[in-house]
Length: 563
Image (cartoon, rainbow, N blue to C red):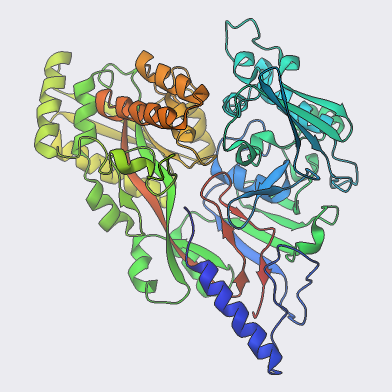
């Protein structure tokens, strides 16, 4: 899980603060911000937080976003029926209480009641119809969400059929197993129960949208700070595209009493040295580091590393003749030195990976980590020599003595370094290979990758919910995140069956077999590392809760103490 020692550190700081207060030494009121109207007590510190992001927000439309930057921003300004708490458990959001549950004709019906005090930032009521409007928009062929399959993943009735071309139910969004009974009553019917149903409902694709306002703004909705309404802890006060954005406390938020922060400023800063300088001069309160700075700061108390369940890998577009060849893909898989990448280039707590479902992420019905069945990943006993043999065989099968490939990546400093590393690895080990690097800004990168306009691209994926399926569903034939022309009937069948299998043990085996097909039999992608983060964070930033799935973090409970 994406947890760190910060929870312990912050608890110790809190205890010390309370002790000093009791002794007449100043300090502030205690509390972790999860309940009550703590307004900061005697602490006079300004409730302002300054952060950076490595990229601009590509989209604030909850039905269209696909990236972590967007999802993290959305988590601060919007809210669904649930949101993740400090322990990464779904806690009530817009829902007033846990739903009533009724079994009916082999299906389960959940009836949610919307809070009376759940308001949009203009003071209007959040309604059940706002959920239906957003969900229908996400599923409609004209506005189809890249995350439309999440409705099927959640087991919601007809969620899969509505987005499956050729199915009689295709495009009939009104047939979705969800309806607004009245203004404050939302009814959801599920065909198949999933153990992570509530966690799924914390994800941005399941957020509501203000129907009347969104329809009025039409294609301008969510493009600017003033073309959105907000129902989360914060609202956008500014959005300067390409430069950064600012949040301020949402006074209409139903739980505003527990929100301490008044303002949050986020600057887009790609250069790590600049981030470090901003941190050291007190202009930002949290900074991620790269290998150039880890040794400099690793012994400081404000330094920490976190291993995340976030995977990085290379997509190999099988529309390319060379990459359609399994031996060529095998050579690329085996020639990549992952240890050199994580120990030298990254040096931030990341670990080498020859697998796709991360380690220390989720456990199966027997309590074992998913990775236990293949702890070292796949092709773990092969290396450079086997890579050269596979490369030679691949070239012979293609009838070529050389291959030119384009490597699509983003224009951030780290991405550029990793791309250069891949180029050196491959060109030095695989005779006849030329790799040309194409660096693009984040938004343009996503557009090119989504359109299949690449040979090799750098991919990254963090989980959207706590289950291996959040990784495995990506590579189903024609899946929204496949993007590389990969298709396997065997893989599709395993993933499809696992989605509806009620026997947990059998389901787990299906998913493990699916990963084996993807990685060992087909060698569809080249996993490179499981991400670690090296972080500097000021000790006066309390209750910065990070999440192992969904949005990266929640700012709702943050408090500035002792600054």
